[in-house]
Amino acid sequence: MAMPAKAPKVSVCIVTYNHISFIGDCLQSIVSQETDFEYEIIVGDDASTDGASDIVREYAELYPNLINPVIRPGNIGASRNLFDIHNRAQGEFVVHLDGDDLALPGKLQQQYLHLMAHPDQVGCGHIVQILDQFGNVTDSHYPRHVQAIYDRANLILMGMPFAHSSLMYRRRCRIPREADRDILDWYIVTDLMRHGPVGLIPSALGAYRINPNSVTTQLGKHVMKELMMEMYCMRAADWPAQRRQFACVAYLECLARLRHGQPIGAALRKLLLGTWTLKALPLLVHTHRRRKANALQLRRGTNV
Image 1 (cartoon, rainbow, N blue to C red):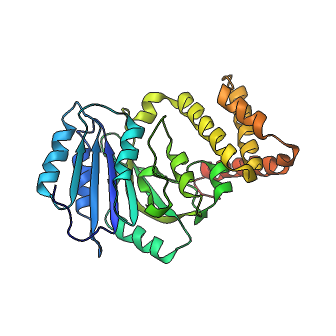
Image 2 (cartoon, rainbow, N blue to C red; image 1 turned 45 degrees about the vertical axis):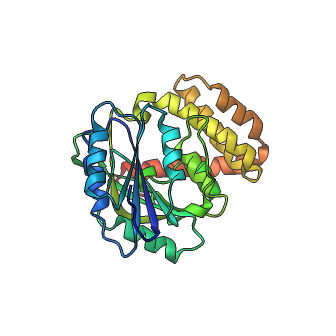
């Protein structure tokens, strides 16, 4: 496959599976980007059965110097597909995009300029508009609470600070991985944060689709929470200095599950027992009050 003669500055990594209704719009939103640098598009289709791979091939034929299609002969799973595509990236900066989401005009240029202006940040995200499954723009956006920069403590207490499909990061900060389990976007971002914080551009530069067939929806909320606790357990072993933050999250999650009559689960129990200390109490009180204040302000239609 012919690729750009000049090395790309940015690699756009798109993962897709059975996105026949969406992948064309996704690809068009990227090939239409106006930039003052070279970029490449690597598309990993995980053996779609609905004809989505044919659309990927059609776009690759239309843009042979821009799009590198990787069509799987058999399904390898979302995490393996993602890591393989990202491992192929050649750009100094790498963008992630799910095949049912969109890039809005100016996304690549604005994120590139942001990271050039903030060399201390390992990556950045942005606000995304929320689309329903039919592509209609809703009156919602994510994240609703915005801050300019996130460090490790923020990421533990708040979870994923922005949509994964809004991420651009410095390739040198990424750990090349081969997936041996389902890996969540939060865990991927924390890999990057070994080298520094991540930033957030307070502008809507992308659109996130509510897709009833997405992996997150199919797994269900409770399974996703258990996977998240497994990721937290792994990170707690890596980041002993953040023990108070992990203990705080574990305790609040335990309270929430007990309140709703849900099982604690092995991963959450392990996290709580491995991190809890009385030194976490002041942070627990502060975080609990902040969450209540945020919830109250959001109900009133504003952010804290």
